[in-house]
Image (cartoon, rainbow, N blue to C red; front, side):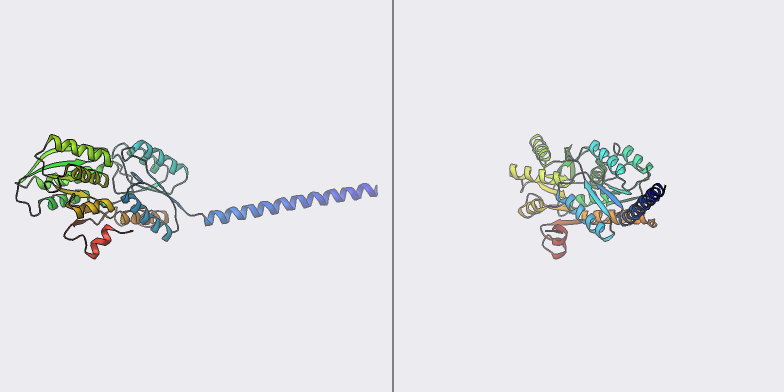
Length: 331
């Protein structure tokens, strides 16, 4: 009996030890999870029209600076083609599934990105639009160039110092992208009041250098009277510049283009391009993420629309210290 009693005591003590150790382990695991959740950074997804151009790389640089300052976890995505709204919609869905608190978004398609954005907002993600707008009343904040005014700047640059008749060709990108259409409308409305401007041809091309170059060459061959061209983003600007270079028309056609990278700045210097309307993508990226942080923290958003700066750069002013900073922010 004594041996049986001793064995029973040992068994009971062993069970108590096991229960205690399990409870202790559970307590540590719970504590670790609590610490992990406390230390986890809020997640913000930055989804743009592309990731390849100098413009978007500068945007991401601004976003990263703000992400570091506000202690956020960021992801950066964009489709390979600036016309691919379907891939953008998939990226929006994936960001929500991964728990994005805010999506900083530049729309490929004003209309066809709207449903995915509204669905994300309905699932408690906030949305800050940068650069290019989307058809949604649920967006928290919009940060971009004043695109209509930028189109007016294109007109002013084209008309400056010109008394001769300007026969204009327009090279724009995707017709469903809001910012490009507003730029063109601003340009058209401004030159409509000028007596020496005739718009001869207007084309929309895929937002690639090759498509813009081919479209420009075809337009010029069909309309040899064109002596001025305007265009509205980085890729189309390069395509137009290469077309002017290939056709040797730099002394015959005035070109006002958009955005800047090392090549388009070189074209400005050598004459294929006469003026660049340069946006501030760094500010868009930085402010987009800064406002995402405000939304996460529950801060009041004072303005739901913010316009970033735009600068006219010509051969005459491109070497001033301030404009060098505009052209080469991160070189």
